[in-house]
Structures are given as C-alpha cells and as structure tokens.
Length: 392
Ligand code: SF4
Ligand code: SF4
Image (spheres, rainbow, N blue to C red):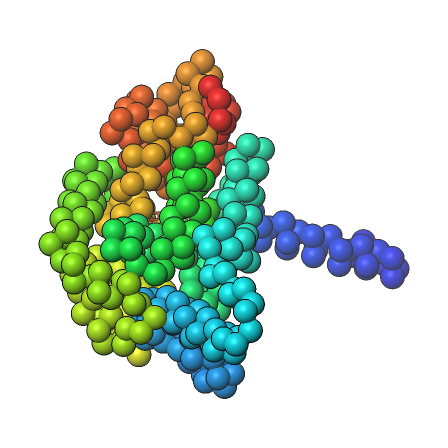
C-alpha cells in the first residue's frame, strides 16, 4: 500500500523526488551536460556576433560593423584624436591657453579595458593560490574573457597582442604617432607575464580563451603530446621573418607611421602588406566579419585544429606566445611539483588539457611547452603535489 496518506507526506515525496532528480542529473549526466552547456554558449556567442551589424547600424555605431580592420580601428582612434586636437587648436588659436596633452601610455593603461584586463589576471592568481580551480571554474573564466574581450561588444577594439608586438615595433622604430597605444598593450601583457607564467595568455587573451573553450568539447583524435619543438620553431621563424622584413621596408613605413591620422584605409592595407603575420592574424577575425568567406575558412581551420590540439594558434603562430615562452623561464609565479608528495601516478598527465604537465613532471624545464598557468593540473592531483606559487 502507498505509504503517503496525508498532504504532508505527499509534499515530502515531491521534495525527495525533486532532490533525487537534481542529484542524479548533476552526477550522472556530466559528460552530456558539459558539451551541451558549451555548445549552448557558443551558439549564443555566434548569434551575438552575427547580429552585431544589425545592432551596430541601428545604433549608428560603425565601429562595430564587421570587416572593419583592426588597423583601421586603431587608425580611426588616432585620427579622431588628431582631428580633436586640431579643432581645439583652431578654437583657441587666439587665446593663449595651454593645449590639452595627447593621451599617454598611462592614460590608456588606466582605461576601463585595461582595468578589466588586470582584474581578470588578479582573479586568476587568487584562484591559483587558493587552489580554487576546476574545469567549471576554468570554463566560466574563459567564457568571461571571451565575452569581454573577444566579441567586440563590451570593448570595441579588443586587446590585440599581435599589435602589442608588431605595431609597437613598427611605430617605435619609425617614430610613429601611435606609440602610446601600442606601448600600453605591450606593457599590459609583458609586466604580468614577467611576474607569473603567461598570466595574460592564460586569463585574458580572447583568442586563447576561444581555443581553450573549443578544446574542452570532447573530440577524438586528440593529440596532447605533439611535437612542441617543431611548433616553437615555426613560431620563432615567423617572428624573425617579421623583424627582417621590417628593416627592408622601414623607410616606406616611416611615411605612414608619422602621419597615421591621415592614412586612407586602402593605403593602410598596403602599409601592412609587408607583415608576414597579416594573412594569419586571427585577432582580425575577432571583429566577426561573418560575411567574408575568408573569415569562415580561417575560423573553421582554427576550430578543427583546436578540437585536436591544445591552443594551436598560440603554439605555432602568435608572436606573444613566442616571446612570453622566453619570459616563462624567469617568471617567479609558476606551477611547481612537490617531489616529496608526487608518486608519479601520471593522473595529472591524463586529466590535464595541455602538453606541458608531462615534461614538467620529468623536469625538462628548458624545452617545456607553454604553461598558461591555467591551474587545471592543481585539482587533478589527489596527493596535492602540484602547487602554484611565487617562491619555491
Ligand atoms: S599565445 Fe597569443 S593567442 Fe595565445 S593566449 Fe597568448 S597572446 Fe593569446
Ligand atoms: S601545466 Fe598545463 S594544466 Fe598545469 S597550469 Fe600549466 S598549462 Fe595548466
């Protein structure tokens, strides 16, 4: 006979059933739930990106329209400042008042974009120190980084690490007008990377976040122990080619760099054509020019590569990836193995997403593949032998 006779009993039955359903869902459907949540997010992100031109045209905000190149956007910024300055100068030419100072590197670093950027890194370091990272925390943080810096909504001109290296170099050596903008990007990436291994790449970079999110979708075949040396060689060869070509065309570049506020977009394309990075600059694709066939081809390649490999663009192309790989060797904040606690069970190697943890365990520090300080290996070790810290 059914044991619940009165109303109180029936309510208890309902409560037990609901609790059982919730617990069962959270325990047994993890493999189903996880890709579902991720796919849902990616679908929403794609819808947002695709609807961007509509929203932009409705609000009259042309900076959000697709196909505007990152360079054009940066030039627009500089151009606006130049126009603003000349208008102000005209207005006040008869009054002997002081000219407003142009924005310096520090002004850019104090803007909301960079404050959000530093905020993400601080949260990352706190989570690493408190060992508060698991797959879900990591997933959440990568989603936030991608939405903030990668969708072109919140901060219209996302931080492009590619510009932080290549454009800074070009403008610096040609005494160009936009040095403070690119110097700000460079400093905001390199100072934290000097403190902790790849803190920018692991906690802020929208392209790094995008690749990592894709990599979390279960997929076979997956290569974790790929030939990092070969990838690294390609990355450094590209950087060397960029520097060498630069000195060949330096005098032509100087013409543009010194008057960048007045460079028409077409000429700007010619200006950047010398750069070996231009055709493979994935940060340009984060302006979501979805009507462009090239955008689809490049994104499909990146998605397939990211399903099979951990951060393929970072490991084989990105100039910041190359330079910060060198900085990794001296950054004090890093993941360390406590040899007394480690029993070499290899659980961290199996469970962590990167190719780094295996050589780290073997003590191959010089040839270590990039460690993005993501912290996933910390929670994968049952013996608590993996730690993140600034001292030994
Ligand atoms: S290596 Fe380049 S693309 Fe990858 S996370 Fe770092 S800055 Fe971003
Ligand atoms: S070793 Fe791998 S899992 Fe551990 S923090 Fe570095 S990148 Fe992340």
